[in-house]
Every structure is written in C-alpha cells, then in structure tokens.
Length: 333
Ligand SMILES: [Zn+2]
Ligand SMILES: [Zn+2]
Image 1 (cartoon, rainbow, N blue to C red):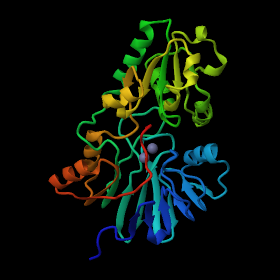
Image 2: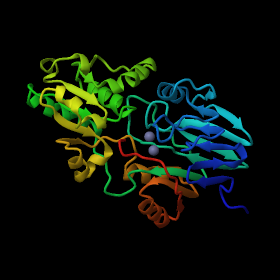
Image 3: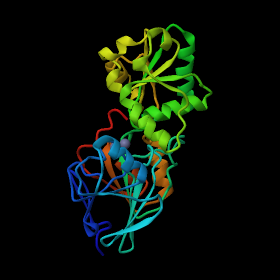
Image 4: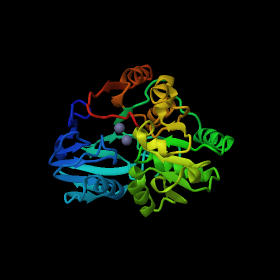
C-alpha cells in the first residue's frame, strides 16, 4: 500500500498537491494557488490563478490590487481541481480564513492553515473535520503557551485605561484580524467610547465592516488632538508603537496584543508596558485537543515549534513528522 498522502509534496516554498497541480499558500508565485487566508505570509501576490474564500480574495485585492485570476469559493462548497475534491471550511483565525480539505483516492487530508479554537466575533468558528492526515500549524506548539481567557485580558486593558484619564492606551495589533478583533472584544465588554485608529488599519477596518463586522465608532488618530485622545484607546500596527508617529499621542501607555506577549523578553524588546496575551493562533491545549478530536492517522506539522508537538503525537500513538516550509512569519500575529 502506498504511503499515506503520497500525492502531497512538501517543498520549502509550500505544499504542492500533485493531482491538482496546485500549491497551498506558496511563498513564490505559482500558476495555481489555493490560499487559506489573507495574512501576507500566506497570501502573496503574483499567482496565475487563486482559489480562496470571497473574504480572502477581497483582502488580497485590498493589498495587491485586482485579482483577475481569483476564483471565490464559499465555505463548505466542493470544487474539483484536477483529480482532487477541494473544500474550504472555517479556521477561526481571521475573516475568511479557511482550512483546506483535500480528498483524493479515498484519502482525506486537511491543511489547517493558521487556526484557533476560541470564539472570535470577527470570523466564523473553526470546524473540526476528521481526516486521515492533519497538516497543522504549530506557532505556539510548546506547553508553555497557554493563552488566558480573552475577556480577562480585555478587562486588564480597560482597567488600565480607566485608571488615568489623562493618558491614552496605545494598543499594537496586527492590521489584519487582530486590530478588528480587539475592537469587537472591547465592544463586547461594553466599551462604547470612540476608538482611535492609525491610518494603516483604516482600509482593513472598512473591509471588515463591509462584511458585516460592526466596529462601533472609530476615529482617525491623525485628525485628532492630544486632548481629544486622552482617556481613549488608540489601535495601531505593532511597527508604529515605538516610532515618531506615537509622539502625537497623549502620554501613551504602550500595550501589545499578541500570543508572544507570554514571553516577557518579547514585551521588553518592544517597550511594551501592558502585554496582552491575545492570539489568533491555537495555544498548546487547542493544538493537542484538536488532534485528539480529529483522530488523524498522521499529523504533519508546519511553521512553529514542531518538536514538542511531534513528541506529543508519538506518545499518543499518532504518527507525526515535520514539514520544513519556509517563509511563514507569525511574529506579529
Ligand atoms: Zn495567519
Ligand atoms: Zn501562519
């Protein structure tokens, strides 16, 4: 009997699905690409044809301009690509994010893309699909990574904000996904005040709203005075935290929302005063619980700390190996 998943090839620049002649999230331009989600390390420009969800295509258009080779696929619809049945199901990572389910010759392989299991008001929840091979991300694949409840992190942010109305809290959050999630989580915690934003996240905010995600009252920080922003939250991409731009703000408390904030040194490197452990990736428990739930025969592990998860799989009698793909950077997740 052939090795399980022998029709899938792992190359440094991505996963190649041979009987579909298609690449998943390739880091180089390819004639045919299947794209799991809009983060720039997964969705690059320049492919011949692109199969992705409507939302992901819209994000790619927002970033790279018109996508003439783009074909939208709805969640749960099945499309035949070459000799492979391809289905996109929600991954719970960011708006439009998908796992890609591949079926060929009676074998089912699920490529998770980036995913998380906890609820996120800005996107559809992860849907578990039992399979023969689960190709999982492992960004936070170490037992030390256990993300706290999102609500308690948001409460810490609000507590800090209310403790000094002369200052603002500047939250560094990745422009696609994290920024909009922080805003909606704040709204869910009853924070109705206007939230100021850095110009670099404006178009993605608008894109989220065009897909029905209500962000409440937002104001452009560039058009506001220090006095107006005192006592308010300002959201900016992580790169803006320590640059000249932040000087326009009223004595900002610097916060950052990322799974990496679990590591003190990462917070210190960015001069973050208020680290918020809010991640769009599965933590250790989510990774292992998901594998338990899907019961795959094999697990293939990508971008992250593969060793620990591989070991965990072995001790649970699941065959596991690592795929050495390059170019996935989840630094700013
Ligand atoms: Zn991502
Ligand atoms: Zn990723």
